[in-house]
Image 1 (cartoon, one colour):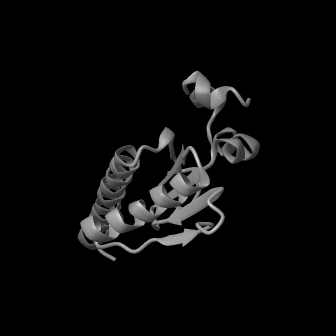
Image 2: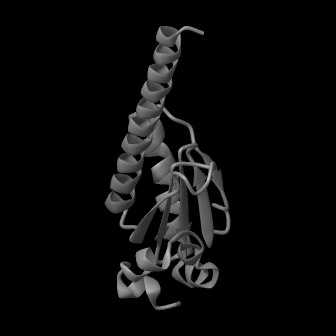
Image 3: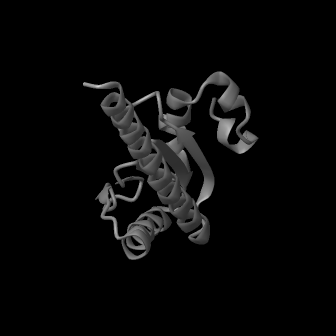
Amino acid sequence: MTVDAASAAERTQADTARDTATESDALLARILASLDENKAEDIVQIDLRGKSSMGDYMVICSGRSSRQVASIAEKLVADIKADLGRSAKLEGKDTGDWVLIDTGDVIVHVFRPEVREFYQLEKMWLSPAEQAALPATQTAAS
C-alpha cells in the first residue's frame, strides 16, 4: 500500500467514525427530547464510548407508574421511527416495570422508580465522580 493509499484509508475511517458519532448524537438528542416531552423523570445519559461496544450512549429515566413507563416507551419508539426513520426494539412493555428500548446506538431504560432504585444501573456505568454530579434524587438509593 502506498503512502497516499494508506492516508486515504485513514481519512475514510476517520470520516466514517465522525459520521457515526454525528448520527448517534442526533439520535440521542431526539431521544432526550421525546423523553422530556413525555414527562419522563430523572433522565440520566451515560456516554458508553470507550466503555462498551453495545452502543454509544445509555439513557436511564423513570415514569411514575407502569402505565406511564409503557406510554413513554411506546411514544419514544414512534418518535424515532417518524422523525429519524429508525426502528427500535422494545422489551418489557407488558409489565411496565422496566422497559428497554434498543435503538442500536443508544440503549434506553425506562423504569418505575422502585425498580430503578433496586437495580441501580447508574452505579454500574458511572464513575464515582459522575455519580457525585447526579442530583440527590438519583443518588438517594446509593
